Image (tube, rainbow, N blue to C red):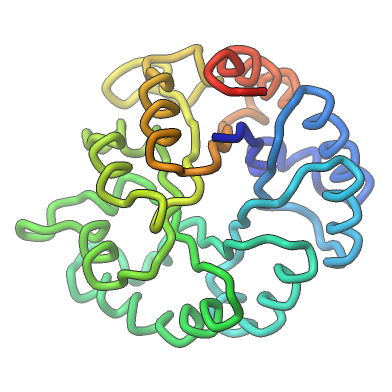
Length: 252
């Protein structure tokens, strides 16, 4: 399993191409092996590819806007092919589809065609969870509907939000396996049961069994994500703290 950086953590640093370039340099200096693009500045796909190649930091997935996935699918596919990213990810289900079985199924129906086009291009559509997907909808939850009724979706599993929802990320990692899980967000919780997000290794989540299980199953990428990092000090320093706390678990 490779240890990567989710650029949403350092989004305040990435508002210009120059800032984004520095972020690539900093993540390489720290020792990260792969990256995810999320909430970055407008930048040409060719230039983003050049950053990725210069620092030998492959882009393993993105969070792309639901609107672009739905209405600008072909251009989005072309961009991902240019910079060699295999997963077009969605950061969250739009609000209008949440809270009901019917809504979850309408979400799948609405995005069925873009997902097919993404897959036809040799890429994957990735879905990143929060906690609402585990709300009880009458004996079922949205997350299980996505798993069961959309068998080609590639999931971006977030450890913090599983913990927050009181669900076992290890059980779901086993359920999804390498065929449906390419990227796991390593996000720590300061205190149980619903504490703040904190740097990895500074909270209550034990990432060692996650790495062991993912290695056994062949799941390739762990991506450090800390949503609240811009409010807590220097984001690069926090990403370095997470890396130093986790690096002994990886073959670096």
